[in-house]
Image (tube, rainbow, N blue to C red; front, side, top):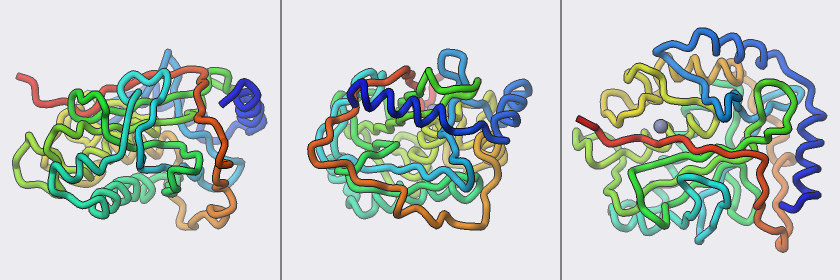
Length: 269
Ligand SMILES: [Zn+2]
């Protein structure tokens, strides 16, 4: 994104009126508990900024080719998940389905919607495999430092998985082979503004476990603190709100700020 594009984005964000959830999100900060913790980047809480009415529709894409993301700490260089899928004897349809199920968990409890878009379109969240394998899974969250208000608008998030690790669908008690859905759901939590709580009994807990495969009360409370509770009404303007980027559109390169959050960590003794 050139300077003009960045400026346009900042102006567009500045035009969004503050919403009722800003206040509640801040007040939650003062009583962070073992249940959930809001992500703070450079001291700022962050979230996908909601429109004036209705849920925020956050788009995501599964990378199909190598892409670099300047400024990212953990997912700076990513590529397609195809190699990861093949190495773990999982098909890409299964990976895509599990990623979709992970997004659906959050969508079910908070006033936020997720829409998969082709890689040719601009996406809010990019998901791929690390080109420089490290750890298991990570997320990077970028935000607009110039956005008004104490809670800053997330401008992009990245989720990357280590393709040299073994992955699976479902639980089998083997804590060295991670479940795709659980892991991606955890990273999505970071991608929408949540950090690790103090306790481990939540999906946002820092350690990979196989005791539950759905959001726990603290995860739900954190998402609701950021976006409000889920509304029964599905978005009606989803199709119109997603505009494919022109074929010659440059890869966005400028960000007002960024920070990485560590992903799921292996059990440490
Ligand atoms: Zn994490």
